[in-house]
Length: 233
Ligand SMILES: C[S@@+](CC[C@H](N)C(=O)[O-])C[C@H]1O[C@@H](n2cnc3c(N)ncnc32)[C@H](O)[C@@H]1O
Image 1 (cartoon, rainbow, N blue to C red):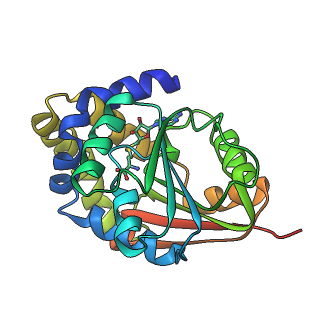
Image 2 (cartoon, protein in one colour):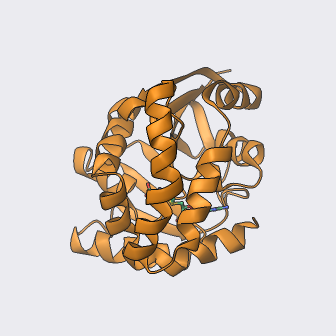
């Protein structure tokens, strides 16, 4: 799917996106983002870029634990950013966080601009993952780190078979009821099913230049946290 079509789909459900996340993940999504922040171990005055920031939940989590971080959130969907903007105003974060409308495949930032980059549930949506990862590598400063949160299929066959039932029958139906549109949740199901397995993502990170790379499964392997560092030359 073209990036603009993906963004349009998210714009359609922006107002209900957070509610659908909470219900469909049984509130696990909050814990996953918290884990991402813990692994990133932000330090005061570091610069953070959250790619595909959506309604800004990753940013909120960082701002909560590290009020001195300088944060930029980027997303292609203006509607998702609008929800994020309203949320940040409620939390008085408008001065700590800058939101930018832009494409993850052409990041509008200079080389070496950030010490931390994150992307939660965005990688699946990029039509050219390698290009997206190369862009992140470029804007990270040497010694910087990338954290990616993404859905995965559980490695245990038993858990996976239950999860596949959930994906095929429950997710599109309930997602449709909660958000008012079933299409994005059919897309979500299909993109999870076709997303490469862990070893391939590690290879892709490595091919771009990230060292070391690694991953850890969360919630029985429904989600996976990947990381990679930009080497200091
Ligand atoms: C599943 S949401 C994830 C939002 C948020 N990171 C979270 O944790 O809930 C994916 C987001 O990626 C954005 N997106 C998709 N393709 C993009 C692209 N090429 N460039 C920037 N944002 C993109 C969508 O607009 C959407 O807001």
